[in-house]
Amino acid sequence: MNGKRLLVLDDDALVAGTIRQIALSAGFEVHCVGDGTAFLEAVERFAPDHLVLDLLLPGMDGVQVIERLARAGCRARLVIISGLDCRVLEAASRNAAELGLAIAGILTKPFRPAQLRALLSEQGGCGGAGPVATGRADEAQGEQALAEDLADAIADRDLSVAYQPKIDCGTGKLAGFEALVRWEHPLLGTIGPARFVPLAERLGLVDGLTECVLDLALDWFARLRADLPAAALEPGLQPQLSVNLSARTLSDTGFVDRVLARCGRAGLAPAEVIFELTETAAMEDPVASLGLLTRLRMKGFQLSIDDFGTGFSSMLQLVRLPFSEVKVDRSFVASASRSHESRAVVKSIIDLGHSLGLRVAAEGVEDEATLALLVDAGCDLAQGYLVARPLAPDCVLPWIQARWPAIDTPRCLRVAGSAA
Ligand code: C2E
Ligand code: MG
Ligand code: MG
Image (cartoon, rainbow, N blue to C red; front, side, top):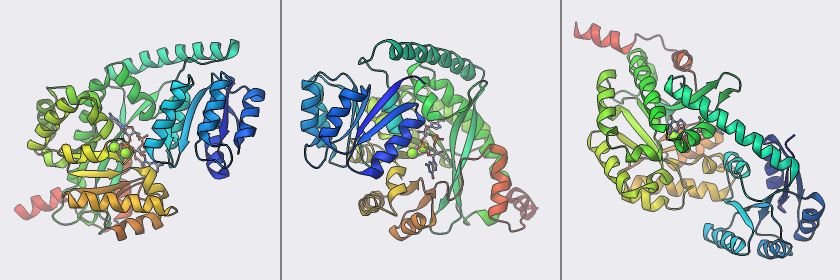
């Protein structure tokens, strides 16, 4: 064990339980309490190095708890969570920082496990002595080794891509695939992109990563397209391949020409490719990104705003940049069948997207009830474990044949046959 200790203050036992599970799986020892007084006592007894604090509490509220923590000289790193308006959360976080507390971050409910894990794994200046410091040194060394391995993997093009299907909500037919990069580490096994894409970005290696993904995905998609059975497709509609872009790519002035040439080599038209980027990525260099994204659209590529609704400037980005698709973040989709608020958010994003002339996709669709309410709300496309998990390249065609079992001649043969 690395000796990390997390103390949670949330009066909602369900939320506290979820946080506990996430933190346990990240190697924390966890203690949860439901009110401010018990929390301040536990800070003394349990000596946590991380705190998760809900703002809205019965009795002593979160802001009062923050003031008491500051007066006690607490050095633990603080994650503030709440279902309150982002602006209230940000104000509380500024207040805590000005009082001298170490802020790991803020999270609005509902949040994704990966977001909390990322905040808990951030390295901070607070801290314990002895064993914790040693743990951090080990982690830093581990991170350094991982960085070197990643640099080698990208240089050797030793990455792979999994493909997750997207279906048309109305017809249930295949609409396309999202390419999701994977790294098979020789010792650590499969590492997900949430862990290594940000590392590649920090190391300045993400251009190589994107090129590797594009090479693999465009060729794979061109081959698959020729074998797709007509039963899987809506007549007249082309399936599309979605590829994620990083913020850094948006300042790479040669990107548009390179990707055009690559599509040409694979025999794909730009209209068959969708680039997905998050609004945070688009915001990193707003001027450069506007130029590059406009050029991509002018060449015929589609653009999708990913994880929509989680950033701080979603609306602004949606109107300012030339997107053709909006992807509702899975945190809203996953809770839509249980939460009235999430349903309202999903419905408003669908209506907003349509009123701007965009296609709307929902990601993270895990059950039939969610798909049914998306269909009802007029959502265009659905992606999620209900349809399929991300699939290894060789598993895609068998998956399609099992889902649309009609005995069918591949389109390429039919076209060739009918032309003859
Ligand atoms: P994303 O683009 O939002 O991709 C969707 C993520 O949600 C994927 O995680 C996918 O496996 C996961 N997912 C799909 N359906 C469900 C579901 O029903 N339930 C749940 N719980 N999760 C679902 P993954 O593959 O771990 O990718 C994480 C993120 O990493 C992606 O989020 C994307 O932002 C980034 N990423 C992936 N591939 C690339 C890449 O080639 N380049 C760049 N720059 N980023 C990438
Ligand atoms: Mg994506
Ligand atoms: Mg997404």
